Image 1 (cartoon, each protein chain N blue to C red):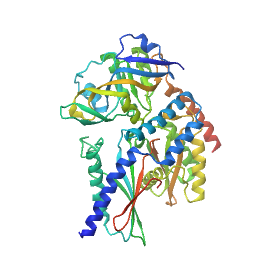
Image 2 (spheres, rainbow over the protein chains, first blue to last red):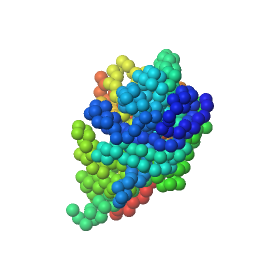
Image 3 (cartoon, one colour):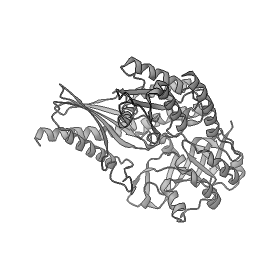
Image 4 (cartoon, one colour):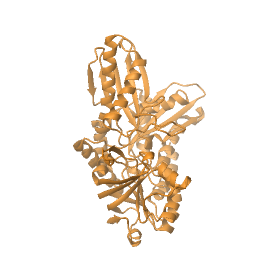
Length: 195
Length: 298
């Protein structure tokens, strides 16, 4: 299992293709915060997102923030939510907007494997609940769109040494979640036989 | 309302406000010990990565006085009210609600509360029937114990109920707990505490499962038959290989706690309520005079 450092947004597709399920990744650059209501607005209500998502790294989040007098937002506590609820947006995010990485916790079900393979995308597993650490790795909230969806807005963060992340699903059709779940289902048969 | 009751109501409100923030920032020692133990036991590479990140996160929350997890949850309180405590539960509830609001606005904390149909925010982590309070009434006592258990949605979404039949027996209970935790995979932020409620009725089994996750980590049910089932399920759950954050490994759960109630001869309900690794809780004992004694271990 290799370790990598990747800067987002990416411009070279090979950056994504060299990542393999189980690898450790640290991220630099800019990432975009997104959540359930943000994606419902884009895809179910057909509203164009006012940020460029090409080559982007999306984080499943709804940050805790403090609004400053000049209208900017200061971080209070920024963490990551469960991804599985948002799996159906994977294919359109990649196909229509060129998103390259989705980061969340708990993984995506198997329906994400094929779009990620064909579109050259990866799923990064973060440690859910580790928000105190994550907050220190987010240097600044640079832009907020759709404030009326607070806290499920579209957020642009500048990050430094964001991670460690684990490649949960790679762009070659491998998913740690699929492998762990298959093995666990087999193990359950053995455990049931012992009860 | 008498002057004493007003002061006491303020004391309960102060306690609630303090407990909510304290629970979110400073996880109990028994949980820290369980996480450290898990880190020693884990052998998988991704599992080790997750557990060392968790330990680092807890240390940073201490240093920076920040929240351990961004999900401030729904505020759940468990109250043990002495029959001679001189404040009516209706006022205790009001105090808990105001305390929750104060903590949310003053810190500030992320406000998660929404109307269940419109999804519009209903207030600073309060709303209709929010916060949620579990009540227990104690005879021959004049005190009040309050425990705040902020419950995150990632783990709460992994709640399961099955009305097993008597012929399913204890085996049916064990199978359901195992299949629930394997099915949940990484979603509830493992390794956490599996709360199981058995017996009673459908609603009461889930209530008991929530009581179970609020216990100090590793405590055992006083009924030896139930305690034995806790030990057995704890071992079995850690054989599933789900591992930290569902990335595979030796440590899937930190503990399994079970609460039970007697039930109808034809019922065999089993409820599972998961509590994530950031199993936050904080307690206070409040005297009839309004003195507050905060308790890290309860």
